[in-house]
Amino acid sequence: MYTVTFIIIILVILAVMGAVYTAFKPRINFFITGLDSGFSFAEISLLWTAAELCSLEQPTALFYSLPALTKCMTQISNMTSADSSDKNQLIMTKLFNYRTKIQNEADDKKGMTTTHSLDKGQTLRIILPGKGVFTSEIVGNGNFLVINVPRQKNLIPYSGEDWVGKVISVYLWKKGDARYVFDTTVTQSGLFLGKSSLFLKHSSNLVRTQKRKSVRVKCEIYGMLYIIKKDKIDVNAIETQNGFRCLIEDISESGALIRIGGKGVQNVKLKLQFNIHNKLILMVGVVRTVEYNEEKNQSLLHFECTHIETPMRNEVLKFVYNMMPENEKEVLEALEQTEDDEKAEEAVTDANGEAAKEADGNNSESAGTDKSEKSEGDAIAQDISAANGKDNAATESPAASSENTSGKITDSNDNIPNKADEINVF
Image 1 (cartoon, one colour):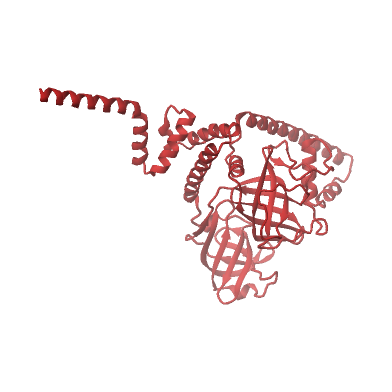
Image 2 (tube, rainbow, N blue to C red):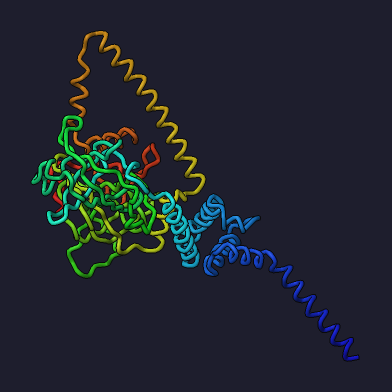
């Protein structure tokens, strides 16, 4: 009797366990696959939540397919646009953090290993032991790495011959990648393309000293800068007064590269206000380094963001990872193709016009010279005016923005002045 009862109990337990396993089989298999693939329990839980929200037929694809992850994040991004609850924003934040981790791991594999891959025009910071830090630029890359004679405070304190035989340390920042350093020897000095230059031994021992913690993308976003002079401010307050116009040239959730007119200064606290996808973004941070172009009287500010609200951070990341809704992508794609058609037509028209001018004996070089004398900021403003088909002379509020025909988000009324008295930021 007891034996029969025991057997029945065992069968009931097995049946319940079988039913539980059947019900949770997809989740169990998902977690087992994730653990076998080396994912942490937290990452597996996050990806399972994402798979459920997106109703994926093959949830395990999130472990090995970046396109599947991107598609899933796009769906969730669209959900957060309709429902920006704290729960949804938190899920998006975690997914973006995971996506950034995957991107950085991929970037690590792309890191440079040899100086043969360096490009002309690459800026170099050179340490000559006991003499300080110098600045130079790559002018040629063949059997040797050819650089300009290094400068210090815009002066050349040592001639090319003084560098020959010296062992130097070279530092550089590869855009969109990381900082690198390598040691090499100056083998000789001489003329290269008519200029005094140094010839360096190539190195296959580039050390990656710092990688980006966040993914950046190039962009053309106009915004407003506000200098923070008080110790305590409301970082989330929307500025209604006009600030200093600027152009954001690359962006991530942790900072931006900002072009301004005039000369910038390090360690200045700023609030950056701009629009992405018609949504206002506020970033508060510090200018870490400044690159000043005396000829153009413009500065590139390397801005580190120290505060941004989670919903705004997610909007920036949507832009970085191109996470806009499908219907907006289609609009931008159509605008881009239209612009390409317009440019192609203009190129044909210009070519015919030039041919006609040459046939008539006109000098077309003067027009090109006049055009080249325009400031970079004026050229940018004209491009935006042409893209929008109107004269952008009116003044807008800092939050106003529009999308140009190239799909790049810009403030159609902003430009980057060349004169310091027009925008004396610092």
